[in-house]
Length: 138
Ligand code: THU
Image 1 (cartoon, helix red, strand yellow):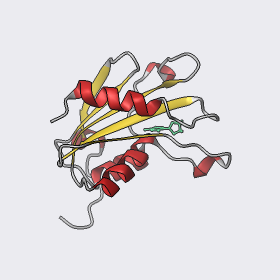
Image 2 (cartoon, helix red, strand yellow):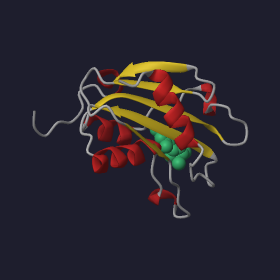
Image 3 (cartoon, helix red, strand yellow):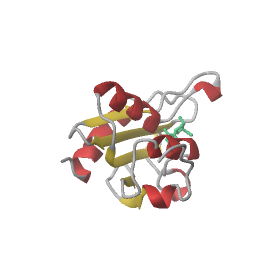
């Protein structure tokens, strides 16, 4: 099963593909699914700003079409394109919408690492990122 380093490499490679000409904040995400595969994605922005979407969302789509259904571990790598700095000095934790999308395929113990391009990271569980999240059916 892919560890942090494998997922970090996949997320970093995906981040290189980011389409982020408007925010100039490039994000890559990699998911280890329960099928043992790693699925990755980048953010895809749009001239009509609200139509863009996050790296985690791309990766989830890749996972679903690839046949994976449960997320074991995720790594998100983000930084500004120009300076490679983490915006605001903080790691990029998934946005609210992506927390909900990740939760659809996660358990409380699913690990999410928010990392910078050098590999420094902060670890969260999904339970920490989305306490009392909405569930339609158990
Ligand atoms: N972004 C992500 O890809 N993932 C996150 O968790 C937060 C934000 C993207 C969306 C947008 O393209 C850019 O970062 C700036 O918000």
